Image (cartoon, rainbow over all chains, first blue to last red; front, side, top):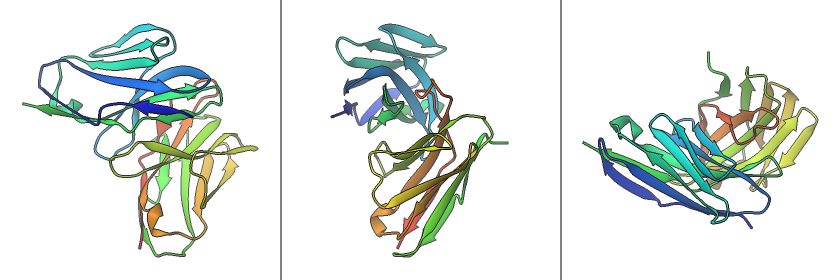
Length: 109
Length: 113
């Protein structure tokens, strides 16, 4: 079967750094993606890792370790607008994405 | 204009009714997907289509059907709606070979009474 685990909630203060972890079990793994969703709105793509290592896009970075079936999303210089749900998703050979249940990030002043 | 549009945005219906949700895209992508999201949960794949002649079941296809009328249009039907199909429904698209990067529509909030 396929499954992903990520924390259900994370709280941090404005300006801080937060890391959202994701562990997965899947067959035919192609890559790990991260999506952001504000309050029931459309999920939006943040980043994708197919190979081990860190990918940086502005304040957001994503890391993958294929040998550990583990990845994380790192958000730096947190802003209030970063309060949202963050989903990790694994892609497989079938061209589908399997999503985790999401981590709700609350950024406090 | 939005690249991926969904109609209706909100719908309230009764048990047993047939409902169709529509999705259109102007991104020129071949691949289209329908997802369901329940409160506090992730996205579950209902059906997906890699081109007009290709339709595949996802994780939770029971009680749903789809039609890919054109490259740009992919509709989802609930033949006989039931209350536990109350959820937020999203359509998404992606380019062939880039299925990890999906572009989502604004969603349809469906309530079945």
